Amino acid sequence: MELNASLPTAANTGVPHSNESPFETALPSRPVRDPDEVLFEMGLWLSGLEGFLCNWDRISKDSQRSGDPEASWVKEFRLTYAALILCSSLNYELRKGLASGAASTHPDGFTVEDCDGFVLELRELIVLNRNLIDSASLKFEAWRTWNQILVDKLRRLPLAVKFSGHWGQDGLNHLPNDLKHLLSNKSLSFSDRADLTDVLARFAIIIRSLSVVGQMLKNDEPLKPTVLVFSKVHERSQDLINFINSRLTRFQDESAELFASLDGASYTASLELKKVYQQELTGLVGIRPAPSIHAKVESAYASLNDSFEQILAGFAMLVDPDVVVTDLFPGIQLKLDRSIELRRHLWKTLKAVQAAETDPQKELVAAVRKELTAFMNEPAGYLFFKDRETLERFTEEVFATTENKDLIPILHRFGAYLETLFGLVNMRTVLASHPFEGK
Image (cartoon, rainbow, N blue to C red; front, side):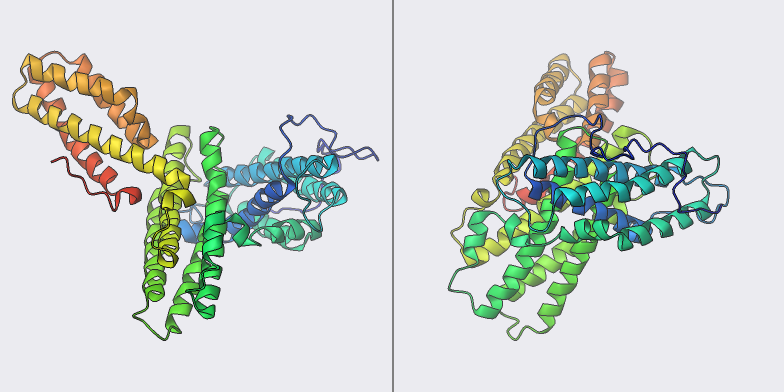
């Protein structure tokens, strides 16, 4: 299928062609956010879209269908369409914020006119993408051609380049204030301070980008577009690992604490990237059921965000051993408290299940159901979505089964599952320095 990048003249983009404002549309109203925040997100989605188009197949080790000439690539077309619509919505929000003049800060170099011009750049791409989705056949050749067209446009359209280029700058602005103050510590040499500042700024941009995914999870928004954010996070994380490794090769004193911290950060980040992108996120684009998408995105987000925050906390303690990590990242304390409570309840439930399996007398079975009732009321909510679903199914079976001969096999499987789940929870990053003492 041959694609033509020109805009069909009969297409209705929803954007007026007259001199009226191109943003007088029926988009839903929302509170005006700081333009810097909106700019960051728009640059993230634009650069993430390019990263997805260029690198996702390689990053996620996804088994694509290029070898099947009859396979449909409509999911990829819909994903790029969703990304373009998202950028258009953010552009509208940015224009609204710039025009209101109510923002606390005004980003340098960006004007209302930029937003008006960018919507015209987006309009051509959105209409062409929509028309392609509506066409009868979307095979691999069509996707490859559209991929090339879109990448070329994102790299050549002046305002698309301007907005995407703004993302990733001034990483130190995304660091917690207490951590920024630590960088002025006089105990660090000039070269160590420069290296640490660069590393922390890069990590801060990655964590700030992941926070967009976290907010989408919290708001229960459609999650498949997060593959674009994960594409950019992988690219930046790999660049950061390469930067650290390059710095390590030039390190004069390999016994220094900073050398050990940088080496550990590089190793940990590499392991997390491999686990998340070659396991959790593989096949995400092709998945249809929303619960399956939610489970993958939630797990990937938690793994990356928690690990990178812990790495930053490690650097902070290197500079100041007395620093309180939860002051830097308040969310860590909440995750720690919930993980400890979850682990404790899992252990109690596991022991109750094992006791009832060994001797399924009425009192012990009742104890299992009592533990499950308490567990499902709150601590179960601290599990990942994919684990909650399995736990709920086992709980329903335990409550619905009355005959011991039927209940014992269920308790046996349930006990094995709880033992595995307990081990996984115990491996959470926030519990690394909190060994379990309940045995």
